[in-house]
Image 1 (cartoon, rainbow, N blue to C red):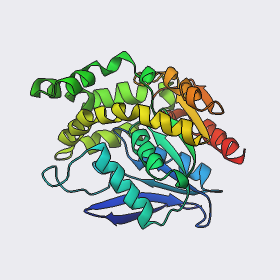
Image 2: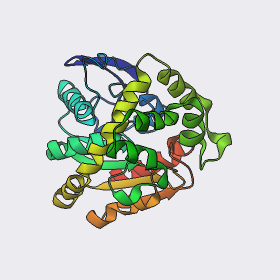
Image 3: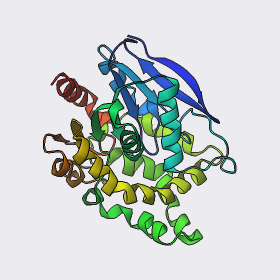
Image 4: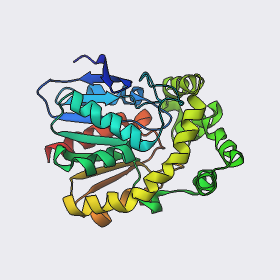
Length: 283
């Protein structure tokens, strides 16, 4: 099994992606979150690719994907969804299992609502779709959504700092001895690139559109009843376990597993999550 690295042009964006596994295998489409990239799946991909065709793109504004500047491309979740939709079409992905994490959830759920016939199942790893999933840490973001002033924008900038990325995103709620520095060091380096902080602040403001879509995401769950596995780092400081359990309100057959780790659960529990995915997909 080898992981290969590719680029796919989608409109004005050059999407970087990782791929592994048999070309004729069931497709698993992995959508990463903030402030990461497909690099976050580096430990999971080899564990899944013996059986599945695993594809993990970098979203526009993240990782190695090349997008136009902010003056030429509007960084919104709707536009990120449209690029990922175009990416699946360019790769002729007719059906796939969605793995969504953090920012990947509202993008993946837009994809599922738009093309429900293509989504065979959903794996949500700390991917929120319910208001009960929000912790108190969202206050600055919510203030910015309600009043998008320069002052409120600046109040959100701290979340982009190296210390916050490392300590809050990666280390909170974990056995820190198990967290490799590779992930947060790379994310911090990406955040230091030109325009990176402003792109992320644009997306922080636009995140409110995801919350507005929660009722539609939930209506999709109720209507189509996709098979869903929720695997949650229960010590996540941003998305609470209640957000994982809420899936069962709309999807009674959903599997929910709470792991003793934080937001980036794959950093410490890639083997456990892989085992849960294999068991879920076999069933």
